[in-house]
Length: 62
Image (tube, rainbow, N blue to C red; front, side, top):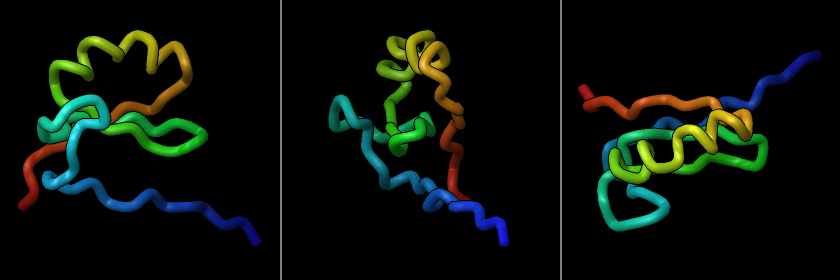
């Protein structure tokens, strides 16, 4: 049987891992997830992509 680990849903109440701002971007890495505000997402996006991260914008919750 093949199982797939489903990451926990991202909610708007999550905070940037670099500052106290609301998270706008989730970076999924093999070791786990990182959350970034808009400022830090722009700052680190190229490095995250180069490291093989899957990036996902965190949108408004319905």
